[in-house]
Length: 257
Image (cartoon, rainbow, N blue to C red; front, side):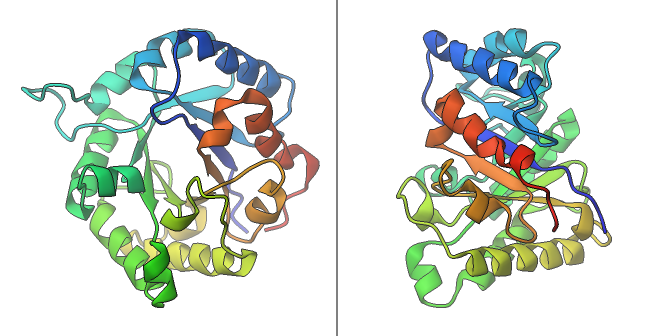
């Protein structure tokens, strides 16, 4: 059986000022104490805090990531950041294709594909997000929709070492609603099979995260499901106690799947 190291990633979105860097320090201290067990812990703050957060995390076991990148390494793209810039600031990961980018910024699969290529070029691990809306799930279209996102977004040059998939049902993000464990298991297994078709031989080692209203109170129910290798956490990641309460399931429970 392939052993995949769990990953608990915090997406701060458009939240966080310098005063909030104390949460980064608290997360580093908790990880140093072994709160997260064998899980890898990642924080993705806004770009304005990335360099300062990197100073805090230096020498720790906490990784940093960006929330988006441009596909080009440099150029006349006012307001954008390249993957190389994120890497230079201290990031080792970048979130791409989040539903808020896909809908609010009209980023389609081709755009996500190109940005993922940019991340790989810079040596970042890409966390590519996929997920369906409530109407798509109710119409029985969730698997087809997620499959098309995977096919369109994943470059053939990716591997299980340079790519993470995050399944976030759009209707569960920030709503307090969550799919059943059975629905999550079905989707994560489907994603693993689909990725193995796109990247032959890589499916078993690929880490697939679940995201969408993950909290300390429901983390065990959601994240110990078969084929779930961690979480992409939104609001709860802004509070170090809540975030580490989620990551702490990997110290409390022995992974059997």
